[in-house]
Image (cartoon, rainbow over all chains, first blue to last red; front, side, top):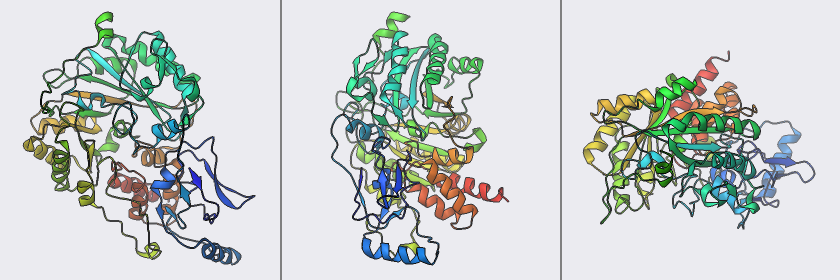
Length: 284
Length: 224
Protein backbone atom coordinates (compact mmCIF):
# COMPACT_ATOMS: atom_id res chain seq x y z
CA UNK A 1 0.00 0.00 0.00
CA UNK A 2 1.21 3.48 -0.73
CA UNK A 3 0.04 7.00 0.09
CA UNK A 4 0.83 9.53 -2.61
CA UNK A 5 2.54 12.40 -0.74
CA UNK A 6 1.61 14.84 -3.49
CA UNK A 7 -2.08 14.14 -2.77
CA UNK A 8 -2.15 13.56 0.99
CA UNK A 9 -3.39 16.55 3.01
CA UNK A 10 -2.65 15.01 6.44
CA UNK A 11 -6.30 15.08 7.49
CA UNK A 12 -5.61 11.86 9.47
CA UNK A 13 -8.97 10.30 8.63
CA UNK A 14 -7.08 7.17 7.61
CA UNK A 15 -5.15 6.81 10.88
CA UNK A 16 -7.91 5.05 12.90
CA UNK A 17 -9.07 3.11 9.85
CA UNK A 18 -6.01 0.84 9.74
CA UNK A 19 -6.67 -2.47 11.57
CA UNK A 20 -2.96 -2.75 12.39
CA UNK A 21 -2.47 0.87 13.47
CA UNK A 22 0.23 1.15 10.82
CA UNK A 23 -0.70 4.64 9.54
CA UNK A 24 0.53 7.80 11.23
CA UNK A 25 1.14 11.45 10.39
CA UNK A 26 4.88 11.90 9.98
CA UNK A 27 5.70 15.29 11.53
CA UNK A 28 8.81 15.63 9.38
CA UNK A 29 6.95 15.59 6.07
CA UNK A 30 3.45 16.46 7.37
CA UNK A 31 1.88 13.59 5.44
CA UNK A 32 0.17 10.33 6.36
CA UNK A 33 2.76 7.58 6.24
CA UNK A 34 2.57 3.80 6.34
CA UNK A 35 4.80 1.73 8.58
CA UNK A 36 5.70 -0.89 5.97
CA UNK A 37 6.80 -3.41 8.56
CA UNK A 38 3.40 -3.36 10.29
CA UNK A 39 1.20 -2.96 7.19
CA UNK A 40 -0.44 -6.28 6.25
CA UNK A 41 -1.72 -5.11 2.83
CA UNK A 42 -5.35 -5.76 3.83
CA UNK A 43 -6.62 -2.92 1.64
CA UNK A 44 -8.93 -1.50 4.31
CA UNK A 45 -7.62 2.04 3.78
CA UNK A 46 -7.81 1.84 0.00
CA UNK A 47 -11.05 -0.06 -0.37
CA UNK A 48 -12.92 0.76 2.83
CA UNK A 49 -12.63 4.52 2.70
CA UNK A 50 -14.81 6.55 0.39
CA UNK A 51 -12.93 8.88 -1.90
CA UNK A 52 -13.33 12.44 -2.95
CA UNK A 53 -11.08 13.80 -5.64
CA UNK A 54 -10.54 17.31 -4.32
CA UNK A 55 -7.61 19.50 -5.26
CA UNK A 56 -4.90 18.87 -2.60
CA UNK A 57 -3.59 22.45 -2.65
CA UNK A 58 -7.08 23.83 -2.08
CA UNK A 59 -7.74 21.42 0.80
CA UNK A 60 -4.39 22.19 2.45
CA UNK A 61 -5.10 25.92 2.24
CA UNK A 62 -8.54 25.54 3.80
CA UNK A 63 -7.11 23.31 6.53
CA UNK A 64 -4.32 25.79 7.25
CA UNK A 65 -6.82 28.62 7.57
CA UNK A 66 -9.11 26.65 9.84
CA UNK A 67 -6.17 25.57 11.97
CA UNK A 68 -5.10 29.19 12.41
CA UNK A 69 -8.53 30.07 13.80
CA UNK A 70 -8.73 26.81 15.83
CA UNK A 71 -11.85 25.69 13.98
CA UNK A 72 -12.85 22.08 14.56
CA UNK A 73 -13.56 19.96 11.49
CA UNK A 74 -16.51 17.57 11.39
CA UNK A 75 -16.00 15.86 8.04
CA UNK A 76 -17.19 12.33 7.35
CA UNK A 77 -14.69 10.12 9.20
CA UNK A 78 -14.30 7.46 6.52
CA UNK A 79 -13.39 9.68 3.57
CA UNK A 80 -10.06 10.31 1.91
CA UNK A 81 -10.63 13.79 0.45
CA UNK A 82 -7.97 13.48 -2.25
CA UNK A 83 -7.98 9.74 -3.08
CA UNK A 84 -4.35 9.49 -2.00
CA UNK A 85 -4.14 5.71 -1.51
CA UNK A 86 -2.65 3.50 -4.18
CA UNK A 87 -2.29 -0.27 -4.21
CA UNK A 88 1.14 -1.61 -5.13
CA UNK A 89 1.88 -4.57 -7.35
CA UNK A 90 3.30 -6.98 -4.78
CA UNK A 91 5.86 -9.73 -5.22
CA UNK A 92 6.75 -12.77 -3.12
CA UNK A 93 7.17 -12.92 -0.23
CA UNK A 94 5.30 -9.70 0.56
CA UNK A 95 2.30 -10.70 -1.53
CA UNK A 96 1.37 -13.33 1.09
CA UNK A 97 0.43 -10.42 3.35
CA UNK A 98 -2.28 -9.39 0.91
CA UNK A 99 -3.43 -12.92 0.14
CA UNK A 100 -4.03 -13.65 3.82
CA UNK A 101 -5.26 -10.22 4.88
CA UNK A 102 -7.46 -8.91 2.08
CA UNK A 103 -10.80 -10.75 2.13
CA UNK A 104 -11.64 -9.98 -1.48
CA UNK A 105 -8.47 -11.68 -2.75
CA UNK A 106 -8.93 -15.31 -3.69
CA UNK A 107 -6.52 -17.97 -2.44
CA UNK A 108 -4.97 -20.03 -5.21
CA UNK A 109 -4.94 -23.07 -2.93
CA UNK A 110 -8.65 -23.02 -2.08
CA UNK A 111 -10.19 -21.20 -5.00
CA UNK A 112 -12.37 -19.33 -2.53
CA UNK A 113 -12.01 -16.01 -0.82
CA UNK A 114 -11.10 -16.11 2.83
CA UNK A 115 -8.45 -17.75 4.91
CA UNK A 116 -9.84 -21.23 5.27
CA UNK A 117 -11.71 -23.83 3.27
CA UNK A 118 -15.39 -24.68 3.12
CA UNK A 119 -14.90 -26.39 6.51
CA UNK A 120 -18.16 -27.79 7.90
CA UNK A 121 -20.15 -25.25 5.92
CA UNK A 122 -20.50 -27.86 3.18
CA UNK A 123 -20.18 -30.89 5.45
CA UNK A 124 -23.61 -32.02 4.26
CA UNK A 125 -22.37 -32.60 0.70
CA UNK A 126 -18.61 -32.79 1.17
CA UNK A 127 -18.18 -34.67 4.43
CA UNK A 128 -15.03 -33.57 6.20
CA UNK A 129 -16.10 -34.28 9.75
CA UNK A 130 -18.20 -37.30 10.72
CA UNK A 131 -19.90 -38.33 13.95
CA UNK A 132 -17.16 -39.03 16.48
CA UNK A 133 -14.72 -36.81 14.63
CA UNK A 134 -13.73 -33.25 15.37
CA UNK A 135 -12.65 -30.51 13.00
CA UNK A 136 -10.72 -27.48 14.23
CA UNK A 137 -10.19 -24.05 12.79
CA UNK A 138 -7.38 -22.43 14.75
CA UNK A 139 -7.31 -18.78 13.85
CA UNK A 140 -4.41 -16.45 14.60
CA UNK A 141 -4.14 -12.69 14.75
CA UNK A 142 -7.76 -11.66 14.65
CA UNK A 143 -9.16 -9.43 15.93
CA UNK A 144 -6.84 -6.52 15.43
CA UNK A 145 -3.50 -7.98 16.46
CA UNK A 146 -1.99 -9.69 13.43
CA UNK A 147 0.50 -12.52 13.37
CA UNK A 148 3.77 -13.49 11.71
CA UNK A 149 4.18 -16.84 10.01
CA UNK A 150 7.01 -17.64 12.41
CA UNK A 151 4.44 -17.73 15.23
CA UNK A 152 2.00 -19.81 13.22
CA UNK A 153 4.83 -22.28 12.64
CA UNK A 154 5.20 -22.69 16.41
CA UNK A 155 1.65 -24.02 16.39
CA UNK A 156 2.01 -26.21 13.31
CA UNK A 157 5.18 -27.73 14.79
CA UNK A 158 3.36 -28.58 18.02
CA UNK A 159 0.35 -30.02 16.20
CA UNK A 160 2.47 -31.98 13.75
CA UNK A 161 4.34 -33.51 16.68
CA UNK A 162 0.98 -34.84 17.88
CA UNK A 163 0.47 -36.54 14.52
CA UNK A 164 -2.58 -34.56 13.41
CA UNK A 165 -3.79 -34.37 9.83
CA UNK A 166 -3.68 -30.88 8.31
CA UNK A 167 -6.51 -30.01 5.93
CA UNK A 168 -4.98 -30.42 2.47
CA UNK A 169 -6.74 -27.51 0.81
CA UNK A 170 -6.10 -24.99 3.56
CA UNK A 171 -3.87 -22.02 2.55
CA UNK A 172 -1.46 -22.56 5.46
CA UNK A 173 -1.07 -26.25 4.58
CA UNK A 174 -0.35 -25.06 1.05
CA UNK A 175 2.65 -23.12 2.40
CA UNK A 176 4.10 -26.08 4.31
CA UNK A 177 7.31 -27.56 3.01
CA UNK A 178 6.92 -30.58 5.29
CA UNK A 179 3.50 -31.62 6.55
CA UNK A 180 5.01 -34.15 8.95
CA UNK A 181 6.95 -31.48 10.85
CA UNK A 182 4.68 -28.49 10.15
CA UNK A 183 7.58 -26.52 8.64
CA UNK A 184 6.48 -23.47 6.63
CA UNK A 185 8.39 -21.85 3.78
CA UNK A 186 11.47 -20.11 5.11
CA UNK A 187 11.02 -16.98 2.96
CA UNK A 188 7.64 -16.06 4.48
CA UNK A 189 8.37 -16.62 8.18
CA UNK A 190 8.84 -12.94 8.99
CA UNK A 191 5.85 -11.73 6.99
CA UNK A 192 3.02 -10.25 9.05
CA UNK A 193 -0.62 -10.90 8.18
CA UNK A 194 -3.97 -9.89 9.60
CA UNK A 195 -5.03 -13.45 10.28
CA UNK A 196 -4.67 -17.05 9.19
CA UNK A 197 -6.42 -20.31 9.94
CA UNK A 198 -4.88 -23.73 10.51
CA UNK A 199 -7.36 -26.53 9.93
CA UNK A 200 -6.99 -30.00 11.34
CA UNK A 201 -9.14 -33.00 12.14
CA UNK A 202 -8.87 -35.66 14.83
CA UNK A 203 -10.94 -38.26 16.57
CA UNK A 204 -13.14 -36.93 19.34
CA UNK A 205 -11.05 -38.53 22.09
CA UNK A 206 -8.06 -36.42 21.00
CA UNK A 207 -9.94 -33.13 21.42
CA UNK A 208 -8.84 -32.34 25.00
CA UNK A 209 -5.13 -32.76 24.25
CA UNK A 210 -5.39 -30.68 21.07
CA UNK A 211 -7.18 -27.84 22.85
CA UNK A 212 -4.67 -27.88 25.69
CA UNK A 213 -1.80 -27.76 23.21
CA UNK A 214 -3.32 -24.79 21.39
CA UNK A 215 -3.73 -22.96 24.67
CA UNK A 216 -0.16 -23.73 25.73
CA UNK A 217 1.42 -22.69 22.44
CA UNK A 218 -0.60 -19.47 22.45
CA UNK A 219 1.19 -18.48 25.65
CA UNK A 220 4.50 -18.61 23.76
CA UNK A 221 3.41 -16.63 20.69
CA UNK A 222 2.61 -12.95 20.87
CA UNK A 223 -0.84 -12.92 19.29
CA UNK A 224 -4.46 -13.90 19.88
CA UNK A 225 -6.10 -17.13 18.78
CA UNK A 226 -9.70 -18.15 18.27
CA UNK A 227 -10.64 -21.80 17.97
CA UNK A 228 -13.65 -23.12 16.13
CA UNK A 229 -14.42 -26.76 16.85
CA UNK A 230 -16.90 -28.74 14.81
CA UNK A 231 -18.60 -32.07 14.64
CA UNK A 232 -21.42 -33.76 12.81
CA UNK A 233 -24.70 -34.05 14.70
CA UNK A 234 -26.42 -37.40 15.16
CA UNK A 235 -29.58 -38.42 13.32
CA UNK A 236 -31.71 -36.49 15.77
CA UNK A 237 -29.74 -33.32 15.04
CA UNK A 238 -28.05 -33.41 18.44
CA UNK A 239 -24.43 -33.24 19.50
CA UNK A 240 -24.06 -35.52 22.47
CA UNK A 241 -20.35 -36.19 22.10
CA UNK A 242 -18.37 -32.97 21.70
CA UNK A 243 -20.43 -30.64 23.89
CA UNK A 244 -19.91 -32.75 27.06
CA UNK A 245 -16.14 -32.69 26.48
CA UNK A 246 -16.19 -28.91 26.14
CA UNK A 247 -18.29 -28.67 29.30
CA UNK A 248 -15.82 -30.84 31.16
CA UNK A 249 -12.92 -28.68 30.02
CA UNK A 250 -14.69 -25.52 31.14
CA UNK A 251 -15.08 -23.90 27.72
CA UNK A 252 -17.87 -21.45 26.97
CA UNK A 253 -19.36 -22.19 23.57
CA UNK A 254 -22.59 -20.28 23.21
CA UNK A 255 -22.00 -19.14 19.62
CA UNK A 256 -21.86 -21.51 16.67
CA UNK A 257 -22.15 -21.92 12.97
CA UNK A 258 -24.83 -24.49 12.24
CA UNK A 259 -25.07 -26.43 8.99
CA UNK A 260 -28.76 -27.01 8.30
CA UNK A 261 -28.20 -29.99 6.01
CA UNK A 262 -29.97 -28.63 2.94
CA UNK A 263 -27.21 -29.26 0.37
CA UNK A 264 -27.13 -31.97 -2.25
CA UNK A 265 -24.86 -32.97 -5.14
CA UNK A 266 -26.16 -31.51 -8.38
CA UNK A 267 -23.21 -31.21 -10.75
CA UNK A 268 -23.38 -33.76 -13.58
CA UNK A 269 -21.54 -36.85 -12.36
CA UNK A 270 -21.03 -35.49 -8.84
CA UNK A 271 -21.94 -37.77 -5.97
CA UNK A 272 -22.14 -37.02 -2.30
CA UNK A 273 -18.68 -37.81 -1.00
CA UNK A 274 -18.08 -40.15 1.89
CA UNK A 275 -15.84 -39.10 4.75
CA UNK A 276 -12.45 -40.66 4.30
CA UNK A 277 -9.21 -39.86 5.96
CA UNK A 278 -6.23 -42.16 6.02
CA UNK A 279 -4.81 -40.54 9.12
CA UNK A 280 -7.99 -41.03 11.08
CA UNK A 281 -8.25 -44.61 9.91
CA UNK A 282 -4.77 -45.22 11.25
CA UNK A 283 -5.32 -43.68 14.67
CA UNK A 284 -8.64 -45.40 15.35
CA UNK B 1 -17.30 -17.83 6.93
CA UNK B 2 -15.28 -18.28 10.06
CA UNK B 3 -15.74 -14.54 9.73
CA UNK B 4 -19.21 -14.88 11.24
CA UNK B 5 -18.30 -17.42 13.91
CA UNK B 6 -16.16 -15.51 16.37
CA UNK B 7 -18.18 -12.51 17.50
CA UNK B 8 -17.59 -11.12 20.92
CA UNK B 9 -20.52 -11.26 23.32
CA UNK B 10 -22.50 -13.66 25.45
CA UNK B 11 -25.50 -15.67 24.31
CA UNK B 12 -27.98 -12.92 25.22
CA UNK B 13 -25.94 -10.44 23.21
CA UNK B 14 -26.80 -12.39 20.04
CA UNK B 15 -30.57 -12.14 20.40
CA UNK B 16 -30.54 -9.69 17.48
CA UNK B 17 -27.75 -11.33 15.48
CA UNK B 18 -28.66 -14.10 13.03
CA UNK B 19 -26.61 -14.67 9.89
CA UNK B 20 -27.95 -17.01 7.27
CA UNK B 21 -25.64 -17.93 4.41
CA UNK B 22 -25.53 -20.31 1.49
CA UNK B 23 -22.44 -21.79 -0.07
CA UNK B 24 -21.88 -24.13 -3.01
CA UNK B 25 -19.28 -26.93 -2.72
CA UNK B 26 -16.62 -26.92 -5.40
CA UNK B 27 -17.11 -29.77 -7.87
CA UNK B 28 -20.28 -30.97 -6.17
CA UNK B 29 -23.01 -28.38 -6.61
CA UNK B 30 -21.29 -25.25 -7.90
CA UNK B 31 -22.55 -25.54 -11.48
CA UNK B 32 -25.49 -23.21 -11.92
CA UNK B 33 -24.98 -21.95 -8.38
CA UNK B 34 -25.03 -18.26 -9.31
CA UNK B 35 -28.76 -18.23 -10.06
CA UNK B 36 -29.45 -20.19 -6.87
CA UNK B 37 -27.41 -17.74 -4.84
CA UNK B 38 -29.35 -14.85 -6.34
CA UNK B 39 -32.58 -16.64 -5.47
CA UNK B 40 -31.30 -17.10 -1.91
CA UNK B 41 -30.62 -13.38 -1.58
CA UNK B 42 -33.97 -12.47 -3.13
CA UNK B 43 -35.72 -14.64 -0.54
CA UNK B 44 -33.70 -13.08 2.29
CA UNK B 45 -34.42 -9.56 1.02
CA UNK B 46 -38.13 -10.18 1.60
CA UNK B 47 -37.56 -10.81 5.31
CA UNK B 48 -36.25 -7.38 6.28
CA UNK B 49 -32.53 -8.16 6.58
CA UNK B 50 -30.22 -5.75 8.34
CA UNK B 51 -27.44 -6.39 5.85
CA UNK B 52 -26.65 -8.69 2.93
CA UNK B 53 -23.47 -9.56 1.10
CA UNK B 54 -22.17 -11.64 -1.78
CA UNK B 55 -18.52 -11.98 -0.82
CA UNK B 56 -17.46 -8.99 -2.88
CA UNK B 57 -19.74 -6.31 -1.55
CA UNK B 58 -22.27 -5.67 1.14
CA UNK B 59 -25.35 -3.47 1.22
CA UNK B 60 -23.38 -0.54 2.62
CA UNK B 61 -20.47 0.45 0.40
CA UNK B 62 -17.79 3.08 0.18
CA UNK B 63 -18.02 5.42 -2.78
CA UNK B 64 -15.16 5.95 -5.20
CA UNK B 65 -16.30 9.39 -6.35
CA UNK B 66 -17.99 11.01 -3.41
CA UNK B 67 -19.54 14.39 -3.98
CA UNK B 68 -18.36 16.86 -1.28
CA UNK B 69 -22.00 17.75 -0.52
CA UNK B 70 -22.27 14.23 0.96
CA UNK B 71 -20.78 15.63 4.16
CA UNK B 72 -24.15 17.28 4.77
CA UNK B 73 -26.58 14.71 3.38
CA UNK B 74 -24.93 11.35 3.00
CA UNK B 75 -27.06 8.43 1.87
CA UNK B 76 -27.00 5.67 4.48
CA UNK B 77 -29.62 3.41 2.91
CA UNK B 78 -28.74 -0.21 2.07
CA UNK B 79 -28.50 -1.36 -1.54
CA UNK B 80 -30.12 -4.81 -1.60
CA UNK B 81 -30.47 -5.04 -5.37
CA UNK B 82 -26.81 -4.20 -5.90
CA UNK B 83 -25.85 -7.20 -3.78
CA UNK B 84 -28.18 -9.53 -5.70
CA UNK B 85 -27.09 -8.29 -9.11
CA UNK B 86 -23.45 -8.39 -8.04
CA UNK B 87 -23.31 -12.18 -7.69
CA UNK B 88 -21.00 -13.16 -10.51
CA UNK B 89 -19.62 -16.55 -9.59
CA UNK B 90 -20.13 -19.32 -7.05
CA UNK B 91 -19.27 -18.18 -3.53
CA UNK B 92 -20.78 -17.34 -0.20
CA UNK B 93 -23.90 -15.17 0.00
CA UNK B 94 -25.11 -14.01 3.37
CA UNK B 95 -27.97 -12.15 5.00
CA UNK B 96 -28.05 -10.71 8.51
CA UNK B 97 -31.28 -10.56 10.52
CA UNK B 98 -32.01 -8.81 13.77
CA UNK B 99 -34.59 -11.26 15.12
CA UNK B 100 -35.12 -14.97 15.29
CA UNK B 101 -38.53 -14.58 13.66
CA UNK B 102 -37.06 -12.97 10.55
CA UNK B 103 -34.22 -15.49 10.31
CA UNK B 104 -36.56 -18.40 10.77
CA UNK B 105 -38.96 -16.99 8.17
CA UNK B 106 -36.15 -16.65 5.66
CA UNK B 107 -34.88 -20.16 6.42
CA UNK B 108 -38.37 -21.58 5.95
CA UNK B 109 -38.64 -19.98 2.52
CA UNK B 110 -35.13 -21.11 1.57
CA UNK B 111 -36.08 -24.69 2.49
CA UNK B 112 -39.22 -24.40 0.36
CA UNK B 113 -37.20 -23.09 -2.59
CA UNK B 114 -35.12 -26.29 -2.45
CA UNK B 115 -31.96 -24.66 -3.81
CA UNK B 116 -29.72 -27.63 -3.04
CA UNK B 117 -26.90 -25.47 -1.69
CA UNK B 118 -25.49 -25.83 1.80
CA UNK B 119 -27.17 -23.38 4.16
CA UNK B 120 -25.68 -22.38 7.51
CA UNK B 121 -26.71 -20.13 10.33
CA UNK B 122 -24.31 -18.25 12.60
CA UNK B 123 -25.77 -17.13 15.89
CA UNK B 124 -26.11 -18.51 19.41
CA UNK B 125 -26.18 -22.30 19.60
CA UNK B 126 -29.67 -22.19 21.06
CA UNK B 127 -30.88 -19.64 18.48
CA UNK B 128 -29.86 -21.76 15.50
CA UNK B 129 -31.27 -24.89 17.05
CA UNK B 130 -34.59 -23.16 17.70
CA UNK B 131 -34.72 -21.95 14.07
CA UNK B 132 -34.02 -25.46 12.78
CA UNK B 133 -36.70 -26.96 14.99
CA UNK B 134 -39.13 -24.20 14.06
CA UNK B 135 -38.64 -25.11 10.40
CA UNK B 136 -38.94 -28.83 11.06
CA UNK B 137 -35.37 -29.76 10.12
CA UNK B 138 -32.50 -31.30 12.06
CA UNK B 139 -29.06 -29.79 12.35
CA UNK B 140 -26.45 -31.56 10.23
CA UNK B 141 -23.21 -30.22 11.73
CA UNK B 142 -22.19 -27.59 14.19
CA UNK B 143 -19.01 -25.55 14.66
CA UNK B 144 -18.69 -23.96 18.10
CA UNK B 145 -16.71 -20.82 18.76
CA UNK B 146 -14.50 -21.19 21.81
CA UNK B 147 -14.00 -17.44 21.91
CA UNK B 148 -10.79 -15.42 21.86
CA UNK B 149 -7.70 -16.58 23.67
CA UNK B 150 -5.58 -13.56 24.59
CA UNK B 151 -2.80 -14.51 27.01
CA UNK B 152 -0.81 -11.36 26.22
CA UNK B 153 -3.61 -8.83 26.85
CA UNK B 154 -3.76 -7.36 23.37
CA UNK B 155 -7.52 -6.94 23.18
CA UNK B 156 -9.45 -3.76 24.05
CA UNK B 157 -12.61 -3.40 26.16
CA UNK B 158 -15.79 -5.33 25.46
CA UNK B 159 -17.65 -2.44 23.77
CA UNK B 160 -14.91 -2.02 21.20
CA UNK B 161 -14.62 -5.77 20.74
CA UNK B 162 -18.34 -6.26 20.19
CA UNK B 163 -18.39 -3.59 17.47
CA UNK B 164 -15.13 -4.61 15.84
CA UNK B 165 -15.58 -8.39 15.67
CA UNK B 166 -18.79 -8.16 13.67
CA UNK B 167 -16.53 -7.90 10.65
CA UNK B 168 -14.88 -11.26 10.95
CA UNK B 169 -12.13 -10.39 8.52
CA UNK B 170 -10.97 -7.66 10.87
CA UNK B 171 -11.68 -4.75 8.53
CA UNK B 172 -13.38 -2.73 11.28
CA UNK B 173 -10.41 -1.63 13.34
CA UNK B 174 -10.43 -1.22 17.10
CA UNK B 175 -9.55 2.45 16.65
CA UNK B 176 -12.44 3.06 14.26
CA UNK B 177 -14.89 1.33 16.60
CA UNK B 178 -13.51 3.40 19.49
CA UNK B 179 -13.82 6.59 17.42
CA UNK B 180 -17.47 5.88 16.60
CA UNK B 181 -18.24 5.14 20.26
CA UNK B 182 -16.67 8.46 21.20
CA UNK B 183 -18.40 10.41 18.41
CA UNK B 184 -21.81 9.05 19.45
CA UNK B 185 -21.16 9.79 23.13
CA UNK B 186 -20.05 13.30 22.26
CA UNK B 187 -23.12 13.87 20.12
CA UNK B 188 -21.02 14.42 17.01
CA UNK B 189 -22.68 11.52 15.16
CA UNK B 190 -26.00 9.74 15.53
CA UNK B 191 -25.84 5.98 16.12
CA UNK B 192 -27.31 5.47 12.62
CA UNK B 193 -24.54 7.52 11.02
CA UNK B 194 -21.84 5.77 13.04
CA UNK B 195 -23.21 2.35 12.15
CA UNK B 196 -23.25 3.12 8.42
CA UNK B 197 -19.62 4.24 8.68
CA UNK B 198 -18.59 0.98 10.35
CA UNK B 199 -20.64 -1.23 8.02
CA UNK B 200 -19.01 0.26 4.93
CA UNK B 201 -15.68 -1.30 5.95
CA UNK B 202 -17.09 -4.84 5.84
CA UNK B 203 -16.95 -5.98 2.19
CA UNK B 204 -18.72 -9.28 2.88
CA UNK B 205 -21.89 -7.62 4.14
CA UNK B 206 -22.04 -9.64 7.37
CA UNK B 207 -21.66 -6.65 9.69
CA UNK B 208 -24.82 -6.32 11.76
CA UNK B 209 -25.97 -2.67 11.73
CA UNK B 210 -28.93 -3.38 14.04
CA UNK B 211 -26.78 -4.91 16.77
CA UNK B 212 -24.15 -2.21 16.29
CA UNK B 213 -26.77 0.50 16.70
CA UNK B 214 -28.05 -1.10 19.89
CA UNK B 215 -24.50 -1.34 21.25
CA UNK B 216 -23.76 2.30 20.42
CA UNK B 217 -27.00 3.48 22.00
CA UNK B 218 -26.36 1.41 25.13
CA UNK B 219 -22.86 2.81 25.37
CA UNK B 220 -24.13 6.39 25.05
CA UNK B 221 -27.03 5.94 27.44
CA UNK B 222 -24.91 4.25 30.11
CA UNK B 223 -22.06 6.73 30.02
CA UNK B 224 -23.99 9.49 31.70
